[in-house]
Image (cartoon, rainbow, N blue to C red; front, side, top):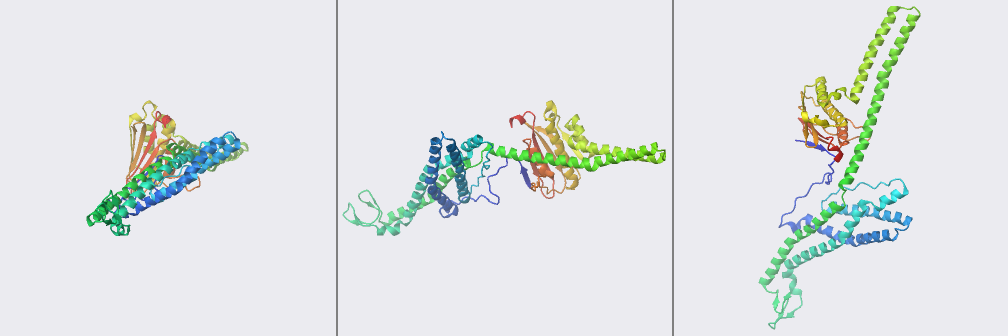
Length: 461
């Protein structure tokens, strides 16, 4: 089944096209590319760490030193913002060498006004979180690199000891003989075949443990990268609300322009024709003209007036369906009765109890169902639609299922400012802190689930 979820909380950290690599086997881990990439990450982080640490100390001390000067505060704010560049560099390293693709925080937007700009620069949370990462990176990178390289060198040394021990200088032992090899105590030398084999065995064990020691340290860096260099939940929420607000404003503007065009090209033109017809009929009656012709003009004007009223009702229904005044259940049943497809509506009585849905949310629920029923009739070649509306905790769930051919997708906006079809519907749902889920495998069925916050929960979002 193909499933696509459009949700404000979907802020994935996986890069498009990037798949998680499976972990290597214990015995092959020392030869795995992942192990060597992780070791390379530790080496590069250690190279960067002194410079990053110096930048952090400079930022803190410089900010404290110039706090009494206005110009100095502005420069200090720029230095804090500069930490964003360091954060981007560390995220890039983690993405390329650790397969951790952390989304970049929202870009800094300078507010209007000098003091507000200075305050936002000095208080930039993204910059300070990057500085904290840089402060912690120095001790962690030093310890991790030293321990990791020590394990690697010890393991390789033990495995190859049988070859290079013979080049060591001779040393007198307690037995009065000269020995070559590593000395432990006064008379224990690694220079006999059993002891050479023991050294190789110890080296093998150490080299097999080395990848997991390295991985332990890189796991700490992964956690730090995700925790300090990723967007905060609050910033993601603010960015999503800004996008939703922009989309809602664009949709409202497009809708108003559409209503304006319909009124100008349709209803207004028809009313102008009615006025001309009535004016011509009046002139004929005043001048003693043909009464029959005047009656025909009045009859035509009467028909045009009724058509104009019908158009106005359709426009009003598109803005606010009159049936909603009697509740969501009645409105959806009316919609089902007017649909070209058989539509079965099942609304739980708890949805409308105690004003569970605010009027604005009822309108969104109605138009969501209307849009989905229309899509099923026009595009899905469906023979029937089932609509279920029920309370689920602090939300109201709307599930619309059709038996059409499936294959529906949410097409993102094309940049023109207009959002049509499912994309516009998803944007409208997100603007009120709701969620929109689409499952539409090829061949059907198509199931759309919309969750809207209730009147009691929307204030807590």
